[in-house]
Image (cartoon, rainbow, N blue to C red; front, side, top):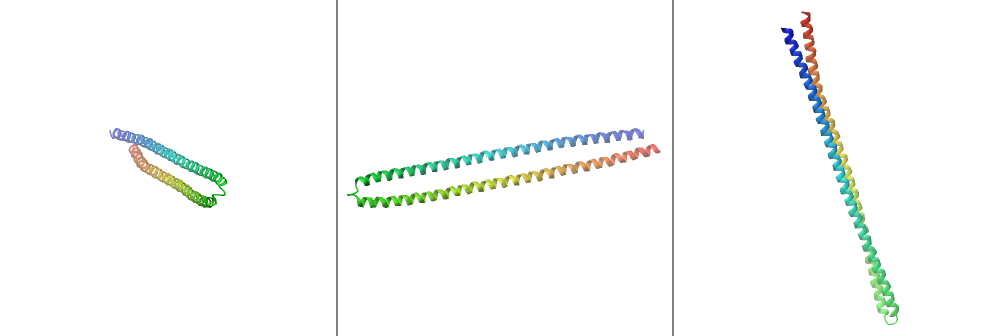
Length: 189
């Protein structure tokens, strides 16, 4: 009778051990699924960031193109103005020496304004380039920090799960050994 009770308890313990193993497998599968979800979210974040960067780059390219076009148009207008002024000056040389001097002064001022405009535009373009570089560096630093946090979280979670299951297996192993000793003692007696 005692043997049957002991055998029954052993079977119960074995069933509990099998259940623990099944639970461990289920937890590991859940952990893997969560890790896949985290990777998917990270990939989506990277993709969104790439799209935003590409849009920003396109806007910058469009801005540069518009600025180039405006500068080209301004130069063309200046060239047209110079040509028209020369034609008029050639026609009125004798009568318009005062007008010629005045026009030369205006042209000089216009050139100075154009040079100042060019310098301002160069400074603005340099500022935009710096902002792009700063944004790129911040984004890369953010990715690095996020990857480090994910790696740390993964390691911590894995270690915690492994340690918990290791402790459970040690406990069950010691119980099985104790049962084996008890069976052995029962057989000896």
